[in-house]
Image 1 (cartoon, rainbow, N blue to C red):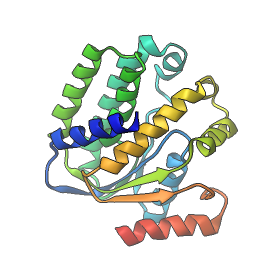
Image 2 (image 1 turned 90 degrees about the vertical axis):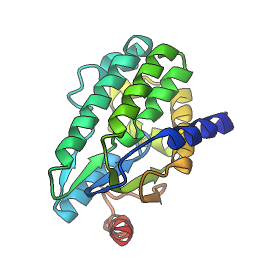
Image 3 (image 1 turned 30 degrees about the horizontal axis):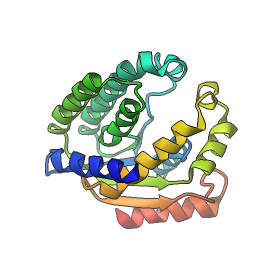
Length: 222
């Protein structure tokens, strides 16, 4: 399966057109659910005195419904996220600097996974992909993409710890598939400077040493 996924993302990036200019103001942080994107994003934003764009999850009117009925809500929730992330990037272009908790650049991962799982029809996915490509043509590259690499077991443990009921209702197979997609996506990622950080065993929330280690990696790459 990984070979098929890798081939897809290779072709995806060959077809993706973004502006050659770099959005010097934008740092994106990405990774599977439970990797610690929000925590790190808040830390980086505070350390560098930047605005933090949190992923539109907490006030998302479709999220609970999606996790309990993915086939019904897969397409509308992907359009919801796509629209919100495009709006965030337009605002980011007017700022001196910001940190993004996920972004439009990696949005395709979830849509592709849902289509493969028969939760989104091929026709819906084709429409989603066309819309995504059209949006990306009007977007510049981020200054830095930070990918938090974590095992599925460790991600699941963190998901259980934070206790969101709709996340705990998700089957293990979904998290396994998501991890596989993320791995292959970032093996092929070529839209900007990429920093991969292995966060297994790191606790940036409670450990000053771990926090400084990760911050220094990001600052050095910038």
